[in-house]
Image (cartoon, rainbow, N blue to C red; front, top):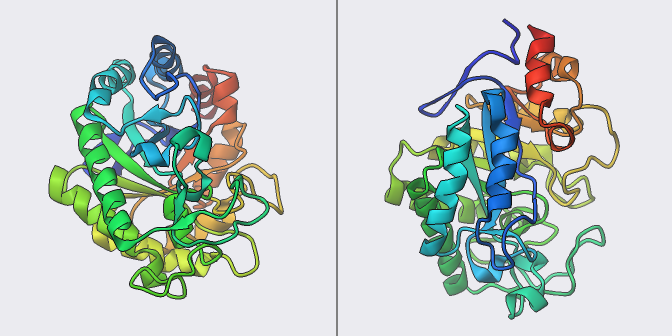
Length: 334
């Protein structure tokens, strides 16, 4: 059996194979984030045949002030649970595990959408590569506590909706990434940006809060913007420390992506282009590491696993274009 087709354990879950559909925004929700028939049909089509081991659903906002765009999926209120159950049902019917990615846009939120001033770790000018519209408001400690509560409540809803786990979105410049990156986090309190312990304090408080409410057996993953690839930004050395701390806290999966480079690598477009990050993190932790980035062939996915660049491979755009890609990939490597 190829590595790609082999099972793997993530926390207490047995995943059928190493293929992951990473979170990709579909804009198939209603304007206020409710599940639609079109969204359910999308996940039914992508999971058909059970060729994917894991689907991580598109980023879902945990609070209205953290909504990134119109049509983004919501997990911010209890009434969202019924719709989200429809999504997990269609995925599980195809023998595929499902994680909900939960997120807050922070300073990347648009005032026209959220109806309020965007919040962030600091009142800082964002890098030009970001989509920030201006300088956000620095969050007070009370506002940080509200965000922690929102993430915890979202995880509870995810479990009630039948998801097999949750993924905290700390990549692509969103709020948790804003606290994590020294480009944005200029705080001098307990969440201070000049110390890695301060930059991951919010993550760890959210992780502990989720565990307290849903139990230690409910899997938590972190999508980590493991490098900003910008002067003064997050480095892989930072992310080794962070990943180890997350593992010690009970996180069962690290999903590697870019920080303020977003979901692209500024220096290469080779298949698996974040492998410079995932390979180092895989050597540093004992939990599985997902590598996503430009993988379009089964042979490349297999080679990345065999060469210990990662434990699981996320394939986004190729599956977005071809819903049979996973089926064909597994057949190709058998």
